[in-house]
Amino acid sequence: MRIAELARRSGAKVSTVRFYERRKLLPVPLRSSNGYRLYDAQDVRRVRFLRRGQELGFTLNELAGFVALSDRSRDGVVLAGEVRERGAAKVVEIDARIEDLRRMRQALVGVLDAPCVEPGAVCPVVAALAGGE
Image (tube, rainbow, N blue to C red; front, side, top):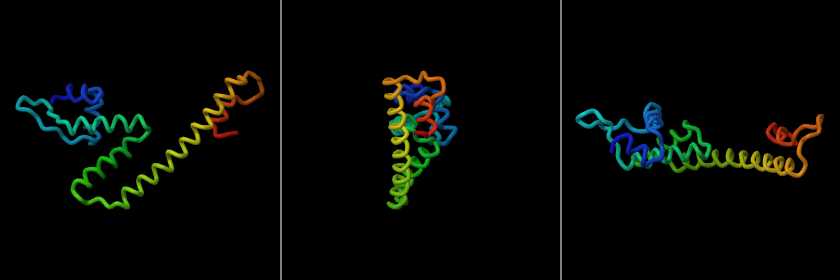
């Protein structure tokens, strides 16, 4: 399939696919005799993975690490400890984000109950984002 079809099937923009290629998150595509890039279902899965990973808060560097890990696992050179270590580090980061979201939620509920309109008081939303009480 051509790049426009890959973009359509994966829900990405053509410019996003090209960006992933420049970042080497997608393998260099084959070219047709007339120079068009050619992709397959594996490329669709990879672009969907990259987009969803970004939506979930993974950085492109982290996603590149997972892509490399996946590629190496197909070659049989990935150690189970390496996967576990990366996963455990991400769980710690996710837990910290969940705690931040809980504080933010609590602050927003507080605003709904008692809006921050006192001139001298710190707004609970601002306090939550700043890591305060």
